[in-house]
Length: 461
Image 1: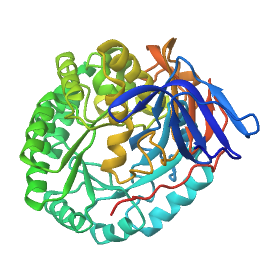
Image 2: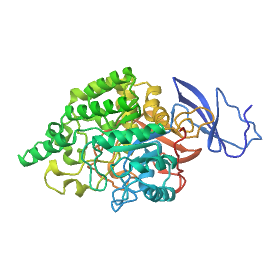
Image 3: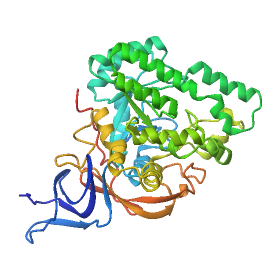
Image 4: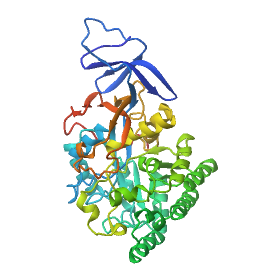
């Protein structure tokens, strides 16, 4: 018997994506939680209940974006802030943002954590969680960050920046040992620092004019070597390891074997590495530049095999936009800034390229974009599925709607027709986004309010 009371909503007639299956069911929301899933809901005329017809639509668990750079708090929040960025996230079906620690100041201690928490709490339209820092100077803060609820700890094996220095091997191992004490998750940007940096400087000094050669500056084996090194350390220490934005088929094959060996390693990739190859740099230039680089078309095709077979665990956007003028400031592609926006391209592109073009099962898509992230980052069972008792984080999508991505109409603070997704023909669109039972986005309009989003600390410790 379903207890119908005030604030009860029923999404009726949709195809609900559950762990391991897709069923036509009615989804009952009571307050902030999913109350029930029923085959044919019939409303009591005396009940205070809202019925929303979603017939012909697919209902997915809210997207958990594992890899985000909000630029806020920071002097650079003119690029993106929590107010605009979280609206853009909602447009893309993202209900929980997992933000990286590279704010200014970075989240390497309680002070950095508190400042980011207060900023997001005031402005975010969707829920949020935080990565903690992994730098040489903050290892003694990791346990406190864990107590504050950080879900993982990010280190750059490549060179980063003065505010967030590279984690060299000795400090990386020590960070792994500390994280092991509380079963924490160590995430790495895996590229050999010296070889990648040398390659970029060499091509710049040689006057190379072909942007597609960025893949040659930081070649596949630079990434593979760092992945192998991180896995060796992690296997020796026995901690949990997360490979951020993995781009290469060789890396995926190695990680597949590592998982079979019992290494506690998880693998993330991003939509751009499953959609675009290095040739897009010739048309988009620095606006499509990112680290690690976009690879060959052959690599893109091979990478999909590891999406399908379960080797790749999660998909994150790596959302981190810049203003257009910043991306061409140096006048030399090999010296330009890396990164671009991607909140509102993540799910639509995976519906387009994955589900509609390649036959990616909806259950697998839900694992990649929500379920696995929740389990790996300790947000499960509160987040990550549509099972009764979980937060009512819900995305309603039309799998058949065809449309063209327009970066100028994005809710992001940085709107641009230079966006890497701009002009891309999509099939599959977000129609509604619900966060904890509240409709925050519908058919091109934001319906939520700033400050509604809540902090989600790591649940399992």
